[in-house]
Length: 147
Image (cartoon, rainbow, N blue to C red; front, side):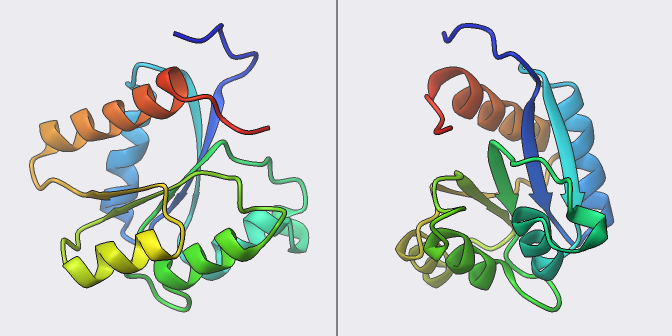
């Protein structure tokens, strides 16, 4: 176990489904590690947030972890993942793909584009909460994160 973190960990959730976003938010709040969740609804907003573009995101904090859905309007998760992992200022941020897709082509493509983990969303709410808690425990208790 690491020494206590000086502030809550920051998670950027990139999720277009309001119900899934609400579930992740509840799960994170009840999770094993103090975290602050920021939410954007699509890939265009995600990149604006990460690059601090526009008035809305000018003061956006750098997240410790990105939870990224794949299938979104405007700019999908595959494109966003590629953008993050090829940007020298963003590439060290861990990205966990959190999606409903269990298609082998999606899994393989995400790992080829630099995903740090690929997780399929469970349908059961208790399993979903358990998965989010496991992600929190792993990334914020077991792993040493980059600065």
